[in-house]
Length: 116
Image (cartoon, rainbow, N blue to C red):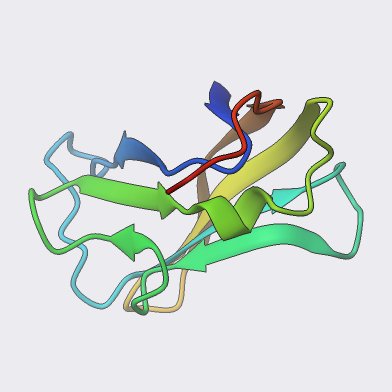
């Protein structure tokens, strides 16, 4: 899945997750991580979000997770534009680990620097 945003801005992405029978996931007891790296296999995250109060909200609509990226998350990205790789990993209440989605995150350069 290809996502796109502008460097240094707030961006929200929403993903849905269903159980095997097609009903929306109950997020109770599930931990989620959204991770972005410069390339697959690189050891350092450009940024990472999680559902423990760090940018992923799962307590609203069943099956829906909202990931909030803030300007500081893309501060280290070159302002000439950069494509990152990302995924969302889950660990359910039983300890089962799965990858919900993944792909490319295109971070476009920012033209305007002023924020106040």
